[in-house]
Amino acid sequence: MTLKKNGNIDFNKITKELKYLKTHEVQIGFWGDRDGHLLTIVRANEYGAKIVPHNKSGKLWIPSREAIKRYGKSVKPSDVKDLFVAGSKKVNGKKVLGKSAGITENGKYVVLFYLLDHVRIPARPFLRKAFYDNQHKYRRLVKVGIDEIVYDDKTGHDLLVKLGKAGVSDVRESIRRWTKPGNAPLTIDNKRGQNNPLVDTGKLSQAVTYKIVRV
Image 1 (cartoon, rainbow, N blue to C red):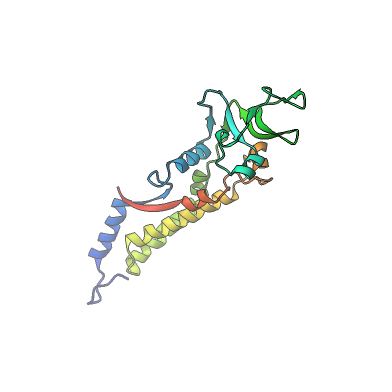
Image 2 (cartoon, rainbow, N blue to C red):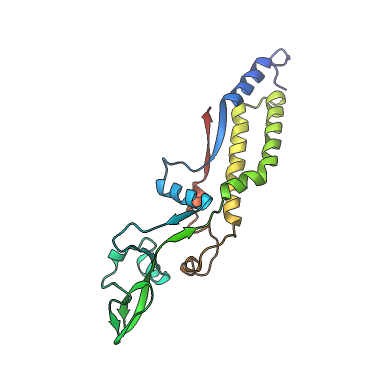
C-alpha cells in the first residue's frame, strides 16, 4: 500500500498518479516522423487501397521475381538495358504477347515487369483486430495497474508503459498471424510461394511502437 513514513496511506500520492492517468494516454502504432512511406503501406493495408498509375505509359510496372533476383526489390524500368514492351518487338520472328516488358536473352523473351492498369489492395485491419481481440486483457491490466498504484507504490506512468508494451506485442502478433485475404498470385510468386500478406522484410512489425502523450 502507498504509505507515508509514519505508516499512513499517502492519499496525495495516489491522487497525483490517478490525475496523471486522466491527463495522459498511451498510443500504439506507427509515426510519420519515422517513415512516411511506411505509413502509406500501413494505411493501404489497414483500410484497403486502389493504386493507379501516374506516368506517361498509363501502366503500373510491377517487377517480376526474375527482375527482383537480378536487380533487387527497388528495381525500376530505367535500371534495365534494352528493356522493351511486349508487342513492340519481335523475338525469333514472332511478336511477344501479353501485358509485360522484358529483354531478349539467348533468343528468348525474359519477363522483367508486368504492366497493370491498377492494383487493388484489400483491407487487412490488423491494428483494429489487435485491439478488439485483446480489449478484455487491457481492461484487466488497467484494473491491476490501479491496484498497484494504491497498494504497491506504482505510478501512472508504470501502468501506461505496461499497456504500451502489451499493445505493441499484440499488433506484432496480429501482423504475424494474418492470412486472409492473402496475397495476389503475382505477389506470391515474387515472394517465392510465401503467402504472408503483412510479412515481407519484417520492417512493418519492427516499426510498431508506443508513446505516452498528454491529452
